[in-house]
Image (cartoon, rainbow, N blue to C red; front, side):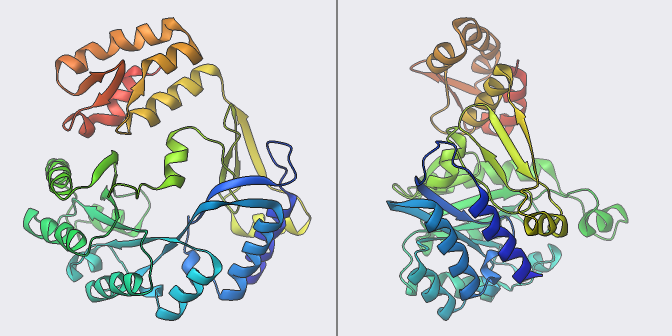
Length: 350
């Protein structure tokens, strides 16, 4: 199955037409994620790289990120990834507590989490990101601080932190429903998020997006391009692409159907043309999540003065409640406002 998947992925890359109409478009970021790309063998990764380099020109300062599980990271793999051009890793550690990792059904141990960070640094990766989860029933504030402090002490340049969410139809959801596991406490999650903001600010990290913190110079270029509305290509099942303007497309999620379609040289996708209102709402949602905030001048220029004025009027109650701050005609979430980011954005939607 993996071999057939890689062949299908390469076929899709070969069949993709450049949005710009250029034969060799320059790309500035490349991200291997959305699954477990760290299980790919050297030859499989090489095939994908060759297909991409035949289709696109890699910018001199390209950021190439690979998502990896701690238990997949070995000295040999790290050296190979570096040799092929991967210069950034994103590692899903989640926690340094064994009981919590077991509760979340993670395959790796706390010891493997620590060892993998040391291996990444020893291999010469200066740019990497670590994911942590907060708000699980087993995580008290003291242990949450220990988790964060470990990353600060290791000088991890980029940290992504997410509140534990229990997705419907998952094993975890069923266990909680059957009262075999404790449910999450949203108030505790909110408090741990606010503590996190303070700890990482004191350690010199920029809180540049709701869930993302970086040492100066180590923001994720790839994710930042999403939030700034830049064009991107996605390859593989469920992958999304965007032309930077008004067309979004996405591949089917089913692996078997994806492979079967590409064996017939057909990219199995759907697409939608975004209305001006949808484009504006997307801008509201993504811009509010960033430390730069929502630019009312930009809204006026691209969507019209009326929309900018309506957003200003609707935002007044959040400014009064100290959930939004204004600076140079930009709306920026306050520390407490970040807890209500999605609700505030939805209230500003058209």
